[in-house]
Image (cartoon, rainbow, N blue to C red):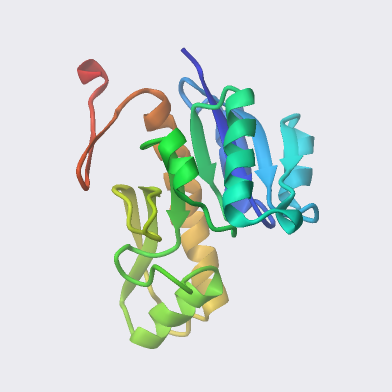
Length: 212
């Protein structure tokens, strides 16, 4: 059965574009992006969805408290018959209503090698600023299941890149997006849709196709 995917966005939507491109190459095996939901009506990600012919929705964040927003979000996801929720630069706090409705079915990509440079305040360029200030020799990206604790859910995939002399936060950010995020996220989505992710506690096992 093909699994319907909703992508949650807030800004430019580069990770959404990576998913749309992977879908166009038939790389999201057993999966199909059927909805893009934005926390902002100004998000360029909405234009990306329109160009790809994917239905887009704007969440009424300004008039709802967080829990009310989550209830409305879950209701919409159910009405759209969504099986997997992907957070791709979604800058709104999510709460237990979403996780209870979609246990081990909400994934996020974070621009560091968790558990380094993650948690409260670690988003966007701040992550790369912290990595460079600490003097790490490698950084990268992590795709993980989302839980109530920020950036602390079971890890699905990780990929590292070298931190080079003279890197700025912007340069490092771009390298990690191109070499890690845009590759890992479609891969993780495809594995989920194929039923090849087995979660036991904190450990995510990737099953061989014959093990499903």
